[in-house]
Image (cartoon, rainbow, N blue to C red; front, side, top):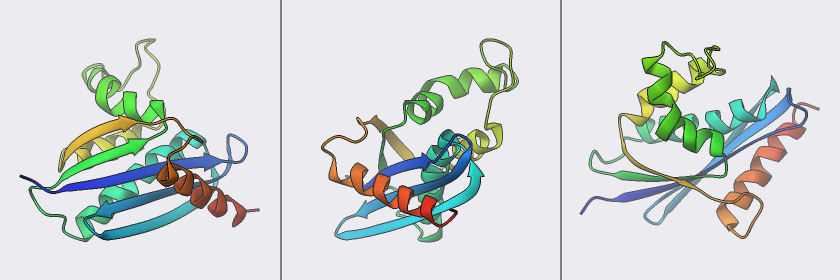
Length: 150
């Protein structure tokens, strides 16, 4: 049986665009890693994507076991639906939406797609600002990052 690494992510923005923050909590057995960062001028969706991207980069830097599975929990339907459903159509349609408009945040989607192909992933959407302590912690961490840009 392969090892399961659990990842919780969140992104936040004050204004949209405005200063933003991202955060992830990665649980690998008994080890827990918490990381956060931000940007002076960004959007909420970009921070949601960046949180997952940063978590995957962390896994690669720390040489996650090749047979490890990642369970990713996000409160962003944009991220969950984008990576599990929309992205295949975007790629097929030359990175255009169903309405023939350019996909927003294309460079982040392309990076997330490339990273996600390196892992066995199960994507989970969870309700934000609810009873999940890890999602709430990620939200708090991301919001703390926003404060660094005010």
